[in-house]
Length: 159
Image 1 (cartoon, one colour):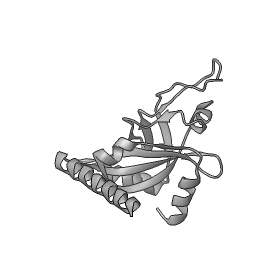
Image 2: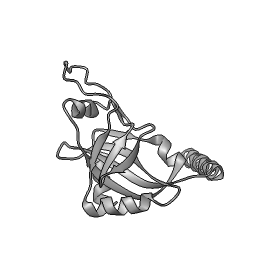
Image 3: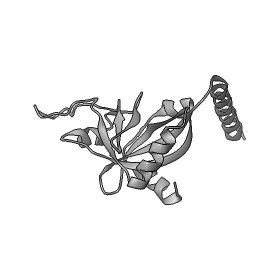
Image 4: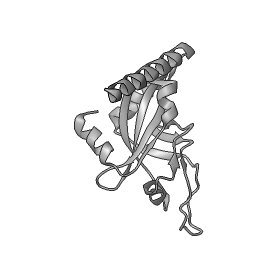
């Protein structure tokens, strides 16, 4: 991810993160994918009414799908409101799909969504990561590093 892409994400009015993912996994590679939405789903995302907890991606017939992503029904929606936890198709290039399909076959690797944001054109995008699961001692190490960073920040503020 280059500097320009990071700026776009920071400026996005909506940033729905999967906070648990960085604790559970090491991110090997990240990709940005479009997402196929129906009806009132984009309105709910713009209000920040979505969750990536326990969401993961899987491949079917050469297509990437996200399962477990919760987009709450739109409050002002009528009878045509969307289903909250349906599977949603992700839009990636053929090259990226082939690469992810091969990498997903490696034991211990999975594909998870880590961020949903709105791009400057008003479309919802999903950052997905090819991730490798952490062991228990890795998780403890991550917590220790996080705590050390907090203490260093506190020390800087006092001086």
